[in-house]
Each structure stands twice: as structure tokens, then as C-alpha cells.
Length: 154
Image 1 (cartoon, rainbow, N blue to C red):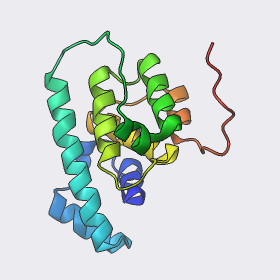
Image 2 (tube, helix red, strand yellow; image 1 turned 45 degrees about the horizontal axis):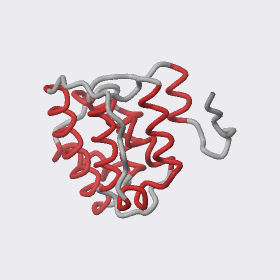
Image 3 (spheres, helix red, strand yellow; image 1 turned 180 degrees about the horizontal axis):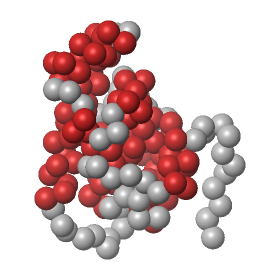
């Protein structure tokens, strides 16, 4: 599924450039993606788009601290939680966007969610809202996990 999401991000500059779901499914199938993965990706993306659209209508600000329940800690893992906190502190994600990222990560059947997949979720959220991270953040989001040095907080 994530290969399809990355393909969409790289192929369609904006989400409104994507064809309708039926036509998109045919194009993805013609490119060589599996029908089951296409279906999963389209459902996941439809849910993301619905949540992202609702987020844009809300303007609530949050100054509170986000505490993760055990289920979230288990599903996300410490690396993903740390990365989400980093993105929020760098103002790449708003508190509402953070919640969408967490919900979409929890929708996966993977525990813990790999950092690479979490980065794709963040990219797809920003893409679905027509937002683009700045160049440094883009490198951090799209860079390889193995190539990165541990992030120092100070």
C-alpha cells in the first residue's frame, strides 16, 4: 500500500490532479500494482482526505500536552512518537494534523509503525491538504532512516 502512496505523491503534484478513484485504480493496475493493495490504498486515502478536509474547517488551537495511551504507544513506538513531537515543535504539523497522523497510523495493521511509513503518512497528509514542507523538512521526511544520525534535542 505504501508503494502506491509514494507513487501518487511522486506522480501527482497536487491531490486534485489525481483522477477519480475508478480511473485511478485502473491506472495503478496498468502500472503493475496489485488489486488488493490498490483497494487498501484508495480506502486509506479516502479516509485521510475526509479527515484532512474536516481539519481545514477547524481552527481550534491547542496549547496542551499530548499524552499517549498504552495502545498508541504500542502501535506507534517511541521513534514515531518522537518524530511526531519533533514535527509539531517545528510547526510542520498542527495539533489537529498530529491527531490525523496518529489516527491514520493506528489504522494500519502494523505494530510498531515504522518511521519510514510514518513519514509517508505525514507527506500524504500535507499533500492531501495542498501543503508542501520546506526543503529541509522535505529531506527529513523523504530521507532514508538508515542514513540519518540520531536527532539531538537541545
